[in-house]
Image 1 (cartoon, each protein chain N blue to C red):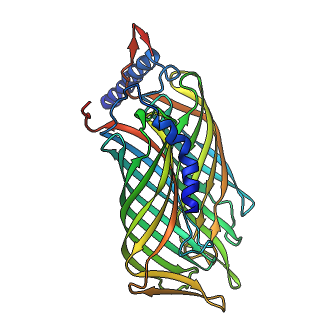
Image 2 (cartoon, rainbow over the protein chains, first blue to last red):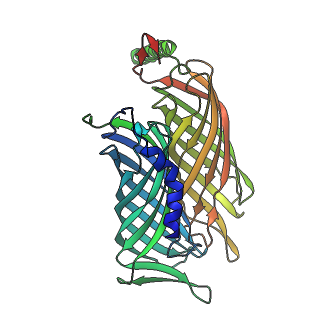
Image 3 (tube, chains in turn blue, green):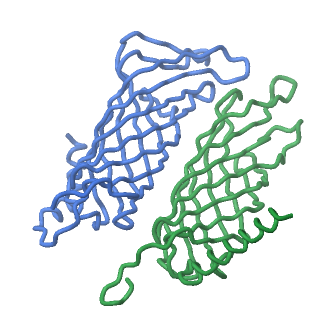
Length: 215
Length: 207
């Protein structure tokens, strides 16, 4: 509840601005095709702040309505585990973005949105070192949701910051440090849902108009 | 002999065509449709290792807009660490991203770039009593650059670029090896017009 209050405070000026009646008409945005590259910080893996990973990825966006955009992405995310092991996540998926305010042809500087989607992922955990035993891995599916904001440098060019929480569905795979300092890699069949907080920053450019929207 | 003449003739014709097009619409008037590239030697400083690095680098900017370019870069490192010394042996990288150019037109072209990429990193590490060399490992890189081009003519430019890169090698090394670095490159680059964009005019005035 406390967090919702803070979100309301953060987005209030934008929502108030959006409530003003639009007197100008803007070009319809459906059909926009944009390409983007991104860096993602994967924090809070299983609630452990020491397992922060940084990754790279790319996506393309196809906008279907003025306020609805879709994002199709691929990410590669390695993370350090207590300097003794490492985890690698591969994500391939899609998200739907809903703009909280009318983007007005992306002529506004800021366009906040909520985002939710699904992805397929591959995770592997392996101990560090040349003689380390073979690690464990698994394929699974995941769902993610969060909030984000475009900063529109020009109507065609934006920087986006997105924060999402991703829940891996299926078998749980994790590593933890034992009392003697060794790392144990454990796999639990349907033992629970695990996840991580993904913070992405991306640069995007609208390359083409795939179809012309009706006025 | 005959084929050599034909090749030389083709190159001359291409140069004249490109030159004529560029003179009509030089890069400092309209960047959209141009490509800017460079190949050079570069230096770097690795923060964790507290050591210098040397590279052969090349990058390319394709202007899809007067203020935006799609950019790619390759960095090939020279070994600056001896075989019996702990540290980074190789630090090659491929980076791809976008740049935002602050000034819409003009000979001065300052920009900021965001170019995530992948490093191919190899490191020497202490393995008991001996120093071992790791396998090459893929390393995701966070990277941002700040630079400026100065277009001196229809085909040449001077450039300077400072690039911050961050990442860590997590493969068969006992502890992660950070590759946080500041890279610097400067020199002479090339620019070329690939296509002539449609110009918007209002009442005969170009906008």
